[in-house]
Length: 312
View 1 (cartoon, one colour):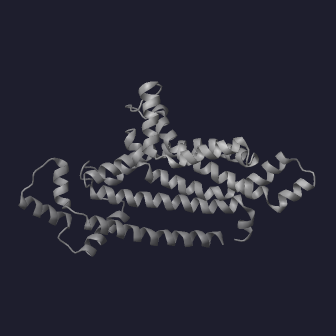
View 2 (cartoon, rainbow, N blue to C red):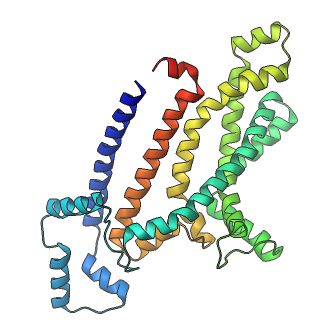
View 3 (cartoon, rainbow, N blue to C red):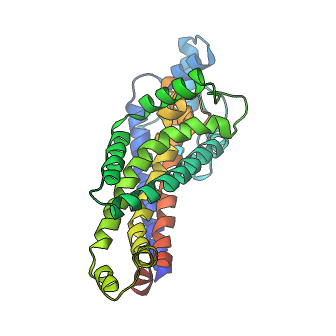
C-alpha cells in the first residue's frame, strides 16, 4: 500500500511540475522587454537591429509560444535549464553552487527554532494563564508581527555595527556570517511554533486519556513526556516540511540584507537583470525541492504514528 501511495504522489508531483513550468514560462513570455535585448544589456553590449534579429532566431524566439515551451521543457528534462544572461553560465550550475549555502542557513534556522519553541511552548501550556505564559505569548506575538527585514536591520545595527560581535559579510561562508541571518529567520518561526506547540499541548492536556492517567495516579511528568508530547508534536511535522520549503525559496529578503550568498539573492539579482532563464530555473528548482520535502514528510508519518501505518 505504501508503494502505491508513493507512486501516486510521484504522479501528482509530475502534474504539478508541468503546471508550474507552464505558468512560469507563460509569465516570463508575457513579461515586458525582449530577452535578446536583456541578454545584450547584461553583457554591456549595445546591439544593432540585425544582431537582435539573428539572436532572436538562434534563441527560437521567432517560433510560436507552444513550440518555445516544448523546446524548453525538453531541454529541462535533460538537465539543461539554459544559459544565464547575466552570469554567462549554465543555470543548473549556478543553482547547484548556491544550494548548499541556503541549505545550511535553513537547517541552522530550523534547529535554533526547535530548541527555542518546543520548551517555551510546553512551559507556556503547563503554566497556562500564569505570568510566564502571558510573557511568552506577548513575546511570540511580537516576534510574528515584526517584519523580517526590520529584525535583520536591528540585529545588524546592534551586534555588527555597535557591539562589533559579528561580521555582516565575509569572503568565507562560516558560522559567524550565518548567525545573524539565521537568528532573523528564527525569531519569526520560533514565535509561530511556540504558539503552535502551546495550543497542541493544551489540547492534549484536556484529552480523556490524560485525565484518566492522572486519575490512576501517574505522575504528571511521566504523562507529559511519554504521552502528551508524542501526540502534540506529530502535527508539527507537516509544518516543519512547509517551513523548510519556505526557507529555501523565501529567504531572499534576509539574504539580500546580509549579502548572504544563497539562492535567494541569486533570484533577486535575476529579477533585477531580467535574467529569464535563471528565473525559470529557480522557480522549477524550488518547486521540485519543496514537493520532495513534503513527500518525505508525509512518508515519515507512517513511521511516527503507528495508526497511520496500520491504516495503510
